[in-house]
Amino acid sequence: QVQLVESGGGLVQPGGSLRLSCAASGSIFNINVMGWHRQAPGKQRELVASIIMISGGRTNYADSVKGRFTISRGNAKNTVYLQLNNLKPEDTAVYYCNALDTAVRSYWGQGTQVTVSS
Image 1 (tube, helix red, strand yellow):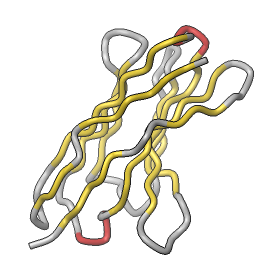
Image 2 (cartoon, one colour; image 1 turned 120 degrees about the vertical axis):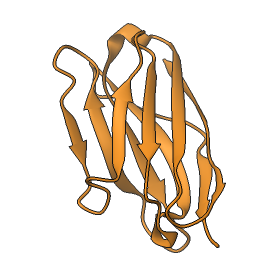
Image 3 (cartoon, one colour; image 1 turned 90 degrees about the vertical axis):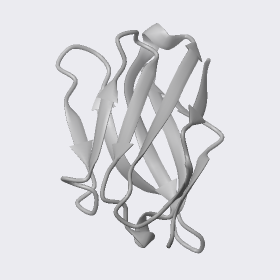
Image 4 (spheres, helix red, strand yellow; image 1 turned 180 degrees about the horizontal axis):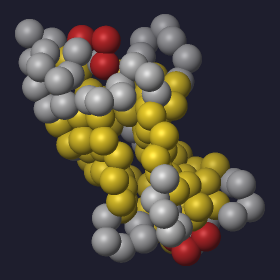
């Protein structure tokens, strides 16, 4: 089992920045991939970015956030960050941390609200 806790959301003006953090606990050495998804009101949850937690650290981004968001790993194998720059109102959503383990089981955090508004 893996438990995920997100932090770092908030209210920011358009063009501003935020940094989201996700800390994993439990069976962290079984985690292969971690990522961030988001869900805006009335919309489906969508993948924002993901990162391979084993060697290489390959990343993947949604087209809508390429060049503005950056996903990274912490030094320990239990933390992932999402740097959000040049935020737009359409980035407003609840952001969820996700982890996939070696058995392809999926775990979710409770979500953190990001609101971009002037």
